[in-house]
Amino acid sequence: MAFTDSSFTNIAVGTKLIVVEQRDRAHRNGTFISAKNGTLTIYWTTYGKNMPFSYDQIDSVKIGDSTLNEDGSLRAPKSSEEDGSLRTPESSEEDFD
Image (cartoon, rainbow, N blue to C red):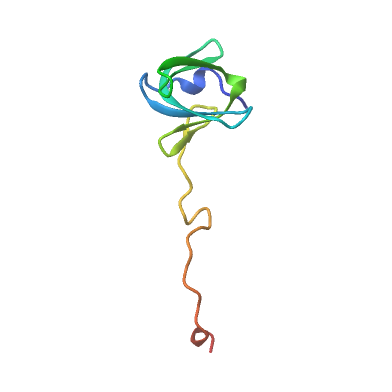
């Protein structure tokens, strides 16, 4: 599935986001302007101008710590328990009688 105009229907104008491009994985920081006719437009804060992206140029869109799914829902980051990064102390030998 790819991004479409409806992927962005729940995003308010002015929402801070990061667009990750497919070509070189560049991260473009900006605020949401519009999404219509196959184009996402953000206000690119780095250069102070509007920047359009055709949907096929977009690898992913980050909003805060979440990722925008192509269906318009947000996927929260995995918790440390879900991704296996939560470590528990090694069991001591005494635990294994």
